[in-house]
Amino acid sequence: MDKLSVLGIMSGTSLDGIDFVLCDIDKNSLKIKFNSSARSLFPPDIRAKLVVATQHNLNVEELALLHHDLGRLYAK
Image (tube, rainbow, N blue to C red):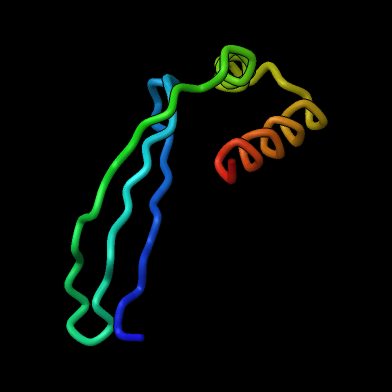
C-alpha cells in the first residue's frame, strides 16, 4: 500500500470542541491530499472540567480522570 490515511484530532484554547481532519499521504512522494474535516462540540460536563483545568484547580486524580475522559471522547 502506497497510501497512508491519517486522522488529525485537535482541540484549541477556545475549549469549544474538537476539530478533525482526514488526509491521505502518499508514502513515495509525501504529498498530502485533504479528504474531509469535521467538528464536534465538547459535552457540557467535559467543557466545564476543561475550564477548571485551565485555572489549575484540579487535583491529580481529577486531572487524570479528565485525560481519560478526553481520550474516550476522541476515540468515540
